[in-house]
Amino acid sequence: MHERLVILDFGSQFTQLIARRVREAGVYSEIYPCTISVDEVAELNPVGIILSGGPSSVYDEGAPQLDPAMLDLTLENGDPVPIFGVCYGLQAMAHVQGGEVQAADKREFGRAAIRTDTQTDLFKGIPEGSQVWMSHGDKMTRLPDDYEIIAHTDNAPIAAVRSTKLPHFGVQFHPEVHHTEYGRQIIENFALRICGCKGDWSAASFIEEKKDEIREQVGDEHVILGLSGGVDSSVAAVLLHEAIGDQLTCIFVNNGLLRKGEWEQVQKTFSDHYQIRLKAIDASDLFLDRLEDVIDPERKRVIIGNTFVEVFDQGKMDIIEELGTKPKFLAQGTLYPDVIESVSFKGPSATIKTHHNVGGLPEEMEFEVIEPFRELFKDEVRAIGRLLGVPEEIVGRHPFPGPGLGIRVIGAVTRPDLALLRDADDIFITEMKRWGLYDEIWQAFAVLLPVQTVGVMGDERTYENVCALRAVTSVDGMTADWSRFPPDFLAHVSNRIVNEIRGINRTVYDISSKPPATIEWE
Image 1 (tube, rainbow, N blue to C red):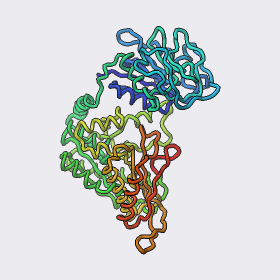
Image 2 (cartoon, rainbow, N blue to C red; image 1 turned 90 degrees about the vertical axis):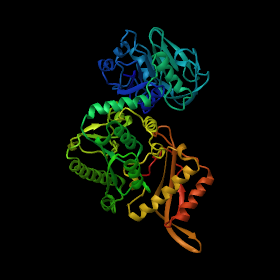
Image 3 (cartoon, helix red, strand yellow; image 1 turned 120 degrees about the horizontal axis):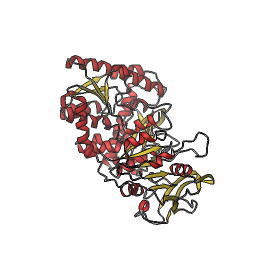
Image 4 (cartoon, helix red, strand yellow; image 1 turned 90 degrees about the horizontal axis):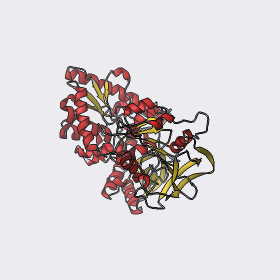
């Protein structure tokens, strides 16, 4: 069993980033809502605890509070559990120990240069004057007893503190965000130096442990997996196949909204190359007929999701007939961010997306669920895929929405428009790879707009469609910036699209960031 570092979520938008940084240090981490009881945390036997930031003020009525007993937890050897408070987490620690937190005269957001009063423990190896990211409206004005200041900035005289008696630390800034220059090292210092973790958790160790776990769980039973061709379901399919072989059957549905060549490529990769039992169902006409004249993007999603469930259910019945027995398990590519979203201190989102690769299947299907990646982030799944030998064109693939091209044809979805979009998207992606730009981008795609414009091609006037190109860079997908492609590249792509695709006479490039825009257009 690997060492476990527990992160208590006080509602921060950056909590997942803390977990990622801890894992990057080779330490397994899990996120729990701050409302978890002290006894429940004790049962987890954590090697350390991190208290996340949050949007509240500790003195507000109803604000989440830290149970003081959390600060008294001990390790198996009787030593105190190390604790690290981040922003609100620091304020919560101070508040319950007699420190004072007040609303600041002015809020502090953005970069600041940190001055360390000691370069031991938390700040070991951190250069003087390095940049940190501030995001807070309150500040600590009086330290609890037995605490001392270990760092400050020009605007924050108490930027970091530590207990003189216990391994308890806190910072007013956010080390988890990439804007903090040495934030990763600060978190590593806490996990490896202060908590004494070995840092032995890795994708390679995960693979063998998970395969053994799957074999024990499945026994002699059969498993169904909904294969989309994306990173998560593809890597899950290969992992499960290595663990249980022909006890796995994958269902791959063509909804008519796939990228160019994807229907053929997925079958070739998984059925022919990996010899995975694959049931491929071409239901494209059914999906497209039901989407006819539908403009609202939410209605599109509902129709696509409901139709998928119907098709998948029929595929399940066919598999039962072929096998002569009913599969007991359903495998899904659920990732840890999806799990966190459902248990967050903030509560389940009002509109949680149907994130599962199988489209959000109903409970009445009566499967036991296998989610091999429910403890992992996307980058960790990619690493596992590479170790398993999954082709790079799958492992390195940009995120692709469940509704597929259905939400990239803006307005009503028609077969001719899908054909135009497929060709334009294929040119865009192909040229990015040819120019060596694809791996630098978080997500890139083409969008077909419900707009026609006048053009001149040869001696003829045209009145044809507009294609928008979208590409963003991001660290985690929560925020994103538009990609600064070389002008020559954009010109080349535009020329190819307009010259090679009859029906498109104009391309535009989306330079909107997230926020205020979203990455997808629908």
